[in-house]
Image 1 (cartoon, one colour):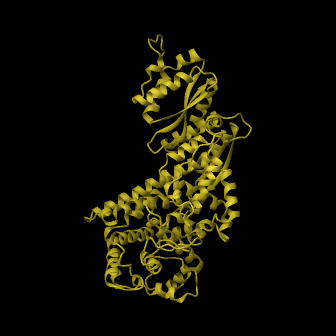
Image 2 (tube, one colour):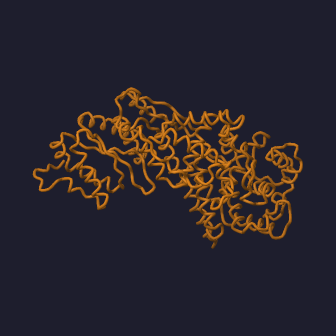
Image 3 (cartoon, helix red, strand yellow):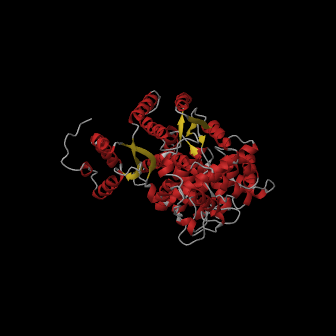
Length: 563
């Protein structure tokens, strides 16, 4: 490291972050922080380039800082990334330099021995170093068994505990590495975690105006629980408040889904939080959460889900453009927004491999979409059949619905003609259909798809493996009825079209399992099974009219679908 034999000015004034306002703030904090023996750390929020420049400054003036203050500075990543790309870091004073260097070298050697991409190794190194240094209390990693065993051996040598959280069918496992209770209080506990002060969680607008709405109940209680038990964690509150309303709702759904996954027996009765006993169990569950670990895991899944959603949208736009069609013009701005958001939820709940996502999306051509789209338009304009769309359903609305059934057919193996028949029977293609017992296009009830997603997630895993021949892992139940319903409130439109269709699709997979029907592709002509599925979907096996209507639907009995 370069020595600084003579300094013509205060080294702090030599700090150059290329952002005047941020630079002034950081310099002021350092001027107060460095000479104060009581302060061991400060938290900064900086962009990647500013963090790199700060590291360079600490490296350059490290000897001067050590000589003057008898300390060295180091930067620790917290893992919290805001939507604008800036990151929370901790600048720490370190007096046990030799021991720190030895431990860091040991971690580097460990991480270097693992069979992982370099970007994953960098993240793993930072997380393990933070555990040893005491700047965090736990971390969750998804690894293959060989890498997990190496981490477990290292953790044992360093006085850390390891717990296996989940095992996936692709061979990987989730492990949680935790600092033992009773150790010296970590810096995280001092500057990031529990304090006596509470901070305000910002409520998403859709919940603020629908606080007492029947369908918002689960997310409202999720917000209440987080506010009650984790609003004293400043870092968590700042992270949550930095999210868009859409991502706030996703996180509330994620916490709710984690609870349902942990308490599968609830699906035998009612999983709703208006039940006092269920609500009390939920509050107890949230109170015991390691909220930092949950936010980290949520962010990991969200990054993957957003990447895969964008992959699907890009492929769809390219396939449509190749035939001179514009996807945005066909389904509208609202449709594009809901498509992305719906795919985000889909890939949060179901963990697909990137190669499978790409392959399945490539199978959705404009010609395949347009074939169904023209048929639905013709049925609306020229027919008065029981399953015809209502006259006031627009072309863009119908396009969204056809696209949604096509996506769920390709990804989940349920004939889109069957889903279109269900939608025609239930609501005549009305996205905003609303009632106490059912909502949206597919009129989902509280005990519809959610019963299977909570209690029988392997139904989906087995079905996709056997029918689609793809390997998918189930993460957590994410789709709540709040995303399916028309809240009947000014400024709040109907629920997400793709999620309305997906929940109906998942319900059909569950019903097919109960009926012993192994494959829901190519349902035309299978009148007995269509009759049984229709009656079961309606919830009343003796309802002959419903089953008959599905079996005789024009969507499943028309020459226009052939050729």
